Image 1 (cartoon, one colour):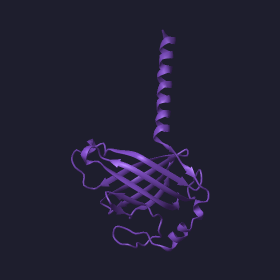
Image 2 (cartoon, one colour):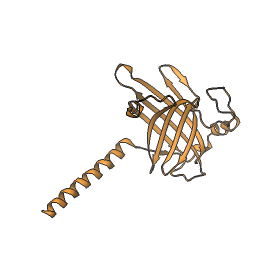
Image 3 (cartoon, one colour):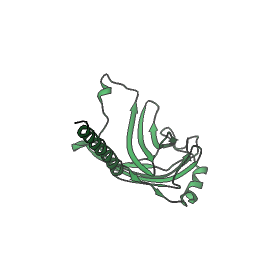
Image 4 (cartoon, helix red, strand yellow):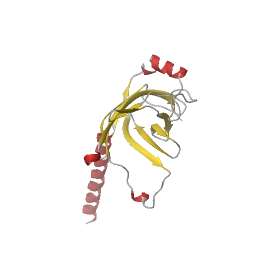
Length: 186
């Protein structure tokens, strides 16, 4: 009886591990590596330019990206780029006014990545904790980095493209974005 229960438990555990591994490989795409990416003249031009913000065309900080989103013929290019490592590498394209905003986050783990949109607000409603977030589906994405792995303090150069369907039913819309970025891993 105990041997039979042990076999069933082992089969359930192995099945769960196979499911999780399969889900990881289906949802997380491979990162492309181009060692010559950091040599593009575009990145040298970033050093001479200032990053645009939602408040002005020229901010105070040096330009870190030219990431641009297009949705329903409107174009938006005020994203800031933040790069953190804890323990996965996170690249975040963010725009906001301090009270609300959003953007796109790229999580990188073992040379595989996943793209997801996010948003935040300070306007909290009574039942907001029940909100599981907006529906989205990544239709296509691409990520190219200048090397395979990064440690804190390393310089990172990259290019990304994404195509995401946000919402569903008659209210759905397609967001497309692409651009180069650079920074230091924090």
